[in-house]
Length: 292
Image (tube, rainbow, N blue to C red; front, side, top):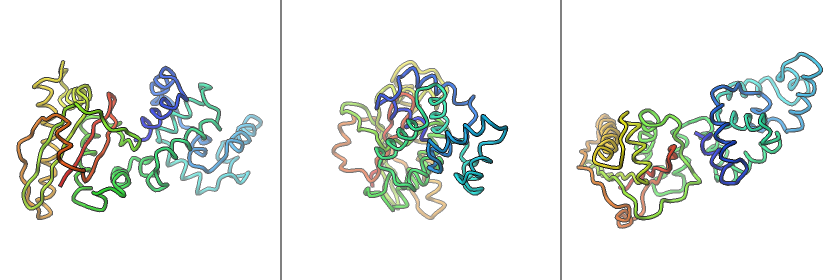
């Protein structure tokens, strides 16, 4: 979840060029994670300590972890924790940029710390995003917002995000730094009524809806037309249908109202949402908003 967001941050801050970032993303599946970079990202070692271990490795045929433990930089427990983090893609991204000479070890660490500060995430929240913990990431995003602590709202948002991951884009990320969309776009809206009430809206630029429709339907849809709108609507129906089934299992009966495609400006009349969730897709932002 963090890899795409960290890459966008580096690009926005002009710490990398578009070409450098694109080439690094292309290499993600071919690179083996290195313990030194993992230790930096986790805060277990400093850049200077990593360099000391690397120098020792050049002089003797020993593993990084063995030397780091011997020098007191790591313990067996922290080494095991690092080994469990080997699939953290944003750390691999940093490692590739170090290999390419874009960053030094210290430069990567400073960039990572700058991203953590700018995102406003607590240590617990960062860990949730870092480990792709959808429940934790949703709870973190909603903390202090109107929908915070409301299990009904949080359950819906979590279900929606999980189904975007499953049916649309496994690399989708909740973006805590996202800026709201300009006015004038389109939105899909559907209400759930019954024992409880819930209204869900999706809004995005046409290109994002088109990309979502293509990925979900597996059809090459040429434009934001009726076929595109039908595919987006089908995905929204899928999520809302699953949510009504889950609620029914908990004794809450809900029915789905017909969907509407509206101008985004009409959302202003609905007042503040209980949850506003910016999802970063390859073509841009998809905003999920939930009203009660």
